[in-house]
Every structure is written in C-alpha cells, then in structure tokens.
Length: 368
Ligand code: IPM
Ligand code: MG
Image (cartoon, rainbow, N blue to C red; front, side):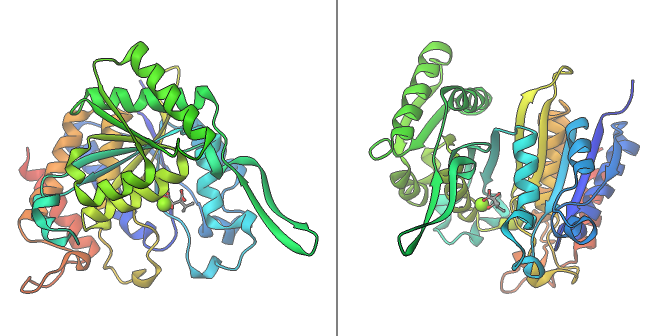
C-alpha cells in the first residue's frame, strides 16, 4: 500500500523555521517507527503571492484536496499589509478551509505543568487545565452573504451576515459530542441566543442532536459573553466548548492565552471522512507568523510539532505515537530546555529553534 500523503505548506514568517524542525520529526517517525509519509512541500500566503500573485494557487488547492493531510506553518506579515483584501495572505488560509470543507476546528488549550507560571492567571486556576474548543470554521459571519461596503446616501455602510443552516450546526455539534466521549464527556455550547436568531437556532439544533444521539454526554449552554468571563474566572469547569466561527475565533484566543504560551498550542481543522475513512484535515500551530522574530532562529517549534502529533492522532490513527511525541515535548520542557518565549528569571540561556528540535528528537530516542 502507498504511504499516506502529507502536503506541507510552511508559509510566511517563522512558518518555514518551525516547519524545518517538524520535517526532522516526520523523518524520525519514518526511520524509527516505520511510519512513513509521502511528503510534498508548496507555497501559501505571502510566499505564494510573491511567486503567483495569489495567496494560494489553483494547483496547490488541488493538491490539498488530494492528500491525506495538510500541515501549515503560518501566513501573513507586514510586507503584505497593504495588499488588496482579495489577495491578502489570510485569504489563502480561508480558501483552504472553505474548499476542503473543514467545518470542525479543534483548538486544545492545555496547560503544561512546567509552564503554569507563564499564565497571566494564578497558577492554581490554570494548572492541569485541559480544554478543547471546537470552532465551526466554514460558515457564519466569515462567509455569509450579503457582505461588503456600499454607499447609503452620503455615508458608507459595512455589511456582514451571520448565517447558519441546521445541517451546518448539526455536523459541528456531532464532532464536539464525539470528542467529549473520548475526554471527560462534557460539552458546553456557546452562542448569543438572547440577541441573535442564528443563536436561537444554534441552541435548538445542539439540543436536538444531544437528545437524539448523545444523551450520555453532559450538555450545558452559555451565552458567549458569559463564556468569555467564565473562561478567565474558572476555566477548569470546561471540557469541550462548541461554538460558531466568530465567537470561536475570539474565545479560542482567550483560552490559548490562559496557558500563557502561544508557542505551545496546536490545532486541527477537520472535514467529513473521505472514502478511505480519513477526514479531510489541516493542521497548524495557533501562533501566527511572528514577523518580529522571523529569521533569528528564536521561534518555538513546539506548537507546530504538536500539530503534527494531532495529525498522527486524528488523521492516521496513531494515537499512541501522538502521545509519544507529546510526552517528548513535555519532557524537554520539564528538563528546563526552553526557547526564548518561555524564559523566566534565573533560567539558563534560551535554546534556538534547531536546538529545541534536537532536544525533542533526543527525547523521542529516549522513549524507545
Ligand atoms: C485564526 C486566525 C484567522 C481567523 C485569520 C488569520 C484569518 O485569527 O485562525 O484564528 O480569523 O480565523
Ligand atoms: Mg484567530
């Protein structure tokens, strides 16, 4: 049988630097664990714009639709700030999400013991935190029509549309309930049913799916503003949070910062299972392109490495190998080896991106 295929899109900023370390990890799994991939590399974001004049070429889009999983670094940077909206680097990412129909975006917020001091919250509020935000990713206000800026009388009006169909809500709700069953069996659904009709429908559909198919899972509902407040007040009350595209964008940044270390957080965007049982999937670190430290060898590759761990788990059914990789990263952190983003007073000198990769590879060797 052919090896599973991976499309690597390093993108912009620190994307290529952190992806270089992931490539070494991928090679390690091929050599030491017999898990080999057919890897191709291509351009996205500003890097694609520089070469093709668009942030994602049709050829690359086609490749993304054909492979078993896509691994993306980061898109965007100051050089592209003044581009027309339609060719901004972010549009490349949005096109991938939309055309691959990646409706379920998994954003774990996990507080590693060794890093609990980095949170802006008190240590006991975040130590041991392990929540999963499931964000709807292909609909809602990000894509709803009508949209645009038009003239009414002598002033301009900006319009975006929040729109959700029942089936769009149902499929992301199912993915949240399925995940909860493999975790602590709790789902909290967040919307604004007090002011938005789409929120009323969201709450109805989540409740119906729950009653019909997942009554063994504990379900609660919260208005999204209260949810934001509860996330910083007592985040450990949550297991899985399911919410729409825009609330999910905001709440997941909030949840990410609870852990204090954006450089540590991976994400997975999943679609419907293909004929071979694998979902369409894109994996990417939550941190952005970090132009301020690009090219300095300072970036923390952990989030991108942990995104590959998510690929092992959710696309390739190698849950145990994913855990091996996650534990290797944790062991490195616990040993005090840290990149510059994770330095505290009294720490040894920070390691470089490559040295962090070395340390994770050594920890992987140790795990055998
Ligand atoms: C994210 C980002 C994107 C979003 C941007 C880069 C388009 O903020 O993945 O959360 O808004 O979805
Ligand atoms: Mg965001």
